[in-house]
Image (cartoon, rainbow, N blue to C red):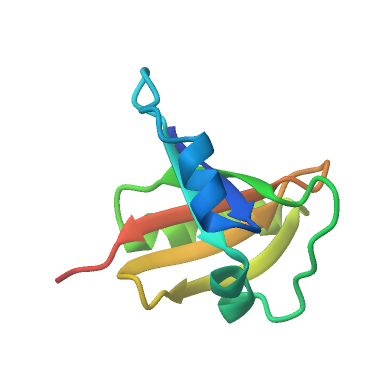
Length: 112
């Protein structure tokens, strides 16, 4: 599994979330704030419920590694929320669900 690289939060009020989290994380872990509109752009049925605003993001070495890990995890019987795709923000991306429903993001930069 690639290293945990970021923690994602679905922000209902982006400005307030930025104001709250404006400190830099001291250990290098990134905090990714996504607007609800961005989440709805790739998960059109998503609805805010308690607990589904947090996700864990794992940075992969390559787009191929995103595909390989997604396949390995889903073939082992775990939830594949969204198959790998080339996201408009320049990354190969995939979404998994852990056994407790925590969203797991796999991503890697697309070639320029």
